[in-house]
Image (cartoon, rainbow, N blue to C red):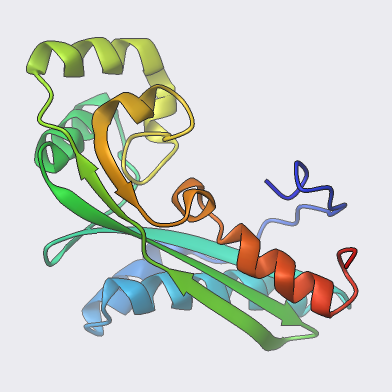
Length: 182
C-alpha cells in the first residue's frame, strides 16, 4: 500500500515474539482494540530503537463477540474460522503507530465492521481450493482485495484499514511531517 501510494521505504522486521506478546496482552485482559494498538507499538519501538527515521508498526485483530482470531495455522483451522464467521458481523481492528528514535509520535486505530454472507459449504470448499495457502496470510482467512470479496455482503469502514493499514490518516500524518508530499 505504501509503495502504491508513492512512498519510498525500507522493511525491517521487528524483533518481537508476537505470540508471546499476544498471550501476555490477552492474559492481562486487554480488549482487542488495545491488543492491536499494543502490538503495533511493540513492533514500531522494536525497530525505531535502531533507526533515526520514522518507523511504522501495524497490527490487526479480528474480533467476533468476545473472541479474537489469529491467522489460521492450516487449512483446517481456516475452514473453522470461516464457518464461525459465516453469516456474522465481525470487527477488524487495525492499528498503526509511528515511532522515532524509540518514542511514539503518532497512533491511529480504526475498526471496520464486516458482515460475512451465509455462503454454502460447497462455496466454502471451492473458495478454500481456489485461494490455497493464501488463506493462511490473514487473520480472517480472507483477502478482501481478491476472492475474499465473495465472502461478504457488507463492509462498513475504511477499505485500506481492512487491508491492514489505516492509510489515509497515516498519509496525512506523513504529509504534516514532510515525509510525504503535501
